[in-house]
Length: 404
Image (cartoon, rainbow, N blue to C red):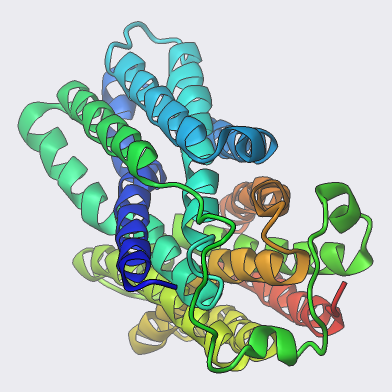
């Protein structure tokens, strides 16, 4: 590959990471929803439903990108995603009355679908330039997406305090929309004749003992190994989303002061971002099996240590447990994109990846189930035991995954 193209691909990666950073703001819902509860009197269940709707349409947007990307390239879905995100936040900023319908249609449907479209296209386009560094590239992109809650979420929280939530939503509409439209004008697929550096160790493929071919989504979903991987991701993600949604309350139940509990939410977010880049580096250096076993070790240790922290009221154990939860959850999206690309090829990656990502829908409902356990028992013990069982089941599926 020519030197100029080598430079160009790193510019594409930077563009992708920055775009993912802005797109990931929708996951700062815990910050963005607070003023809505005050102004409109919406209860936690009504606000939680909006997040679930958003997750569903995030997956729908990703699938739509997978269908159109081969004919239209990455430009159309990224720019379309930017326009939808702009409309979603803009309409939400104009809400009035007490009905949640406008919220669900704007933030839930439009913004969710827009981010889903852009997310899939950004990953697909950027990965096409890094066949030799699939894991590292995936990790960098996912780290940008995961870091948004901590970085832009904090900025959004401060803006809400200073200029009000309506102006904050409007600013987010303009900023995210502009960044995604600009990214759509810059990013493109690597040309078919592009040549890239050969990886020093193609462990991800050599360790599996096969040379991958391109699978269609239909072919991929007919293979049992795909569904084993799907269930592994579902269980692993369910652990992460459940703990993240209740991290502050878990810390409080372990005896942490309110200020420390809030700080630990930020620590968990940082670890989430680190998990994404570390798992990508492991994937490239040692292959799929080692990366997934390392991630699964964290997934088992995280709820086990957090459970001990709650049972014994240990703040140090709580810090370790929540940090490990962040690291383990961060591994999931990176491993998902890297495995789908490695196992099933790059030709149909966008659609295959969006199909795999639908595990986010059922995993998001586990947090709701966990909340009902806490309401009934007044403790996180049963929830954390359930998550520990999930982690062991995930290990079983992990060990059963073989090449397609």
